Image (tube, rainbow, N blue to C red):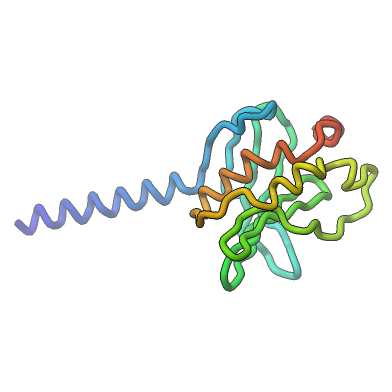
Amino acid sequence: MKTVVKFAGIICILCFSLETASAKKIKGQSNTEMGKYEIVESEISIEHKGKTLETYTLCYENCTKKMFIGIEKQKDCKNFIVVIEDMKIIYTCNNGVFGTKKLPKQKSTSLSIDDAIDRQQFYYQKVITKKPKTEKELLALIACYYPQLINENYIENKV
């Protein structure tokens, strides 16, 4: 009987370890021209408001430019700061709603923020979901919605 309990305990530990390892890599289809995406823990960290954030790298099969997603943990929710080069977009949860947030001040670039994002998509994405999701699910939602938010010209200039 003790052997069975020990064996069951070892299996539980292995399952938890495999689940944790798989949580560090998220793959899916963006259903956009950018194609499949992969999100992995990043070795590079994003700094935001003087804090070092837990950061993930977001890659698409049809885009050579890497994007980074920093997670800013707050009291009631999390902010997801998506960074490509010198542009930031924030996805956040607010009163149970997950979507885009007012754009932060951007560094001066050769291409303005107005040229880089599709304003109509920005407003559509203010409410992506009203159902609470796990961090992994929210990262996947960002990977699916983000390509629609960015104008093709911006990605073409950055690829």
